[in-house]
Length: 99
Image (cartoon, rainbow, N blue to C red; front, side, top):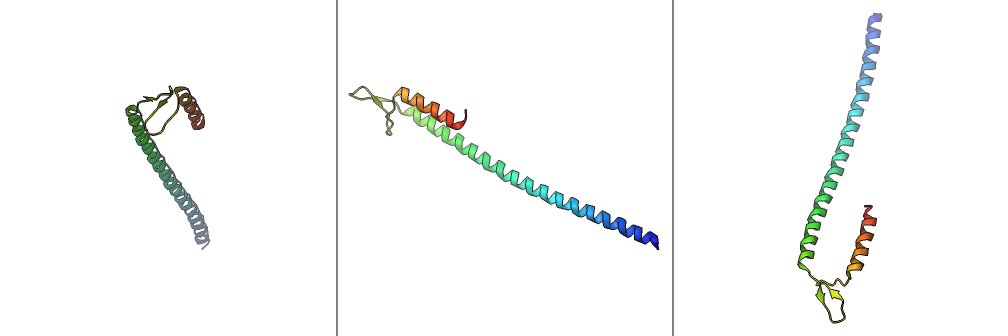
């Protein structure tokens, strides 16, 4: 008769351990799903940046400076930066990007 009480106590301990492990597993699954969503979002951003970068490079290759009477160059599309100004702008953009 006392053996049954010991078995019941062991069974309760095992049930609590299984419940605890089940909860941990569900938390890990949730963490994994969140990480998967984050990775997917980052991949989408990277693909978009690469796609936009390719578009910018191809459009810059087509646009060549046109000399104007006052000695400055203008680029079709409204860009009126001198080469020095473009260099400074690139430095600013690199600092903003943390490079």
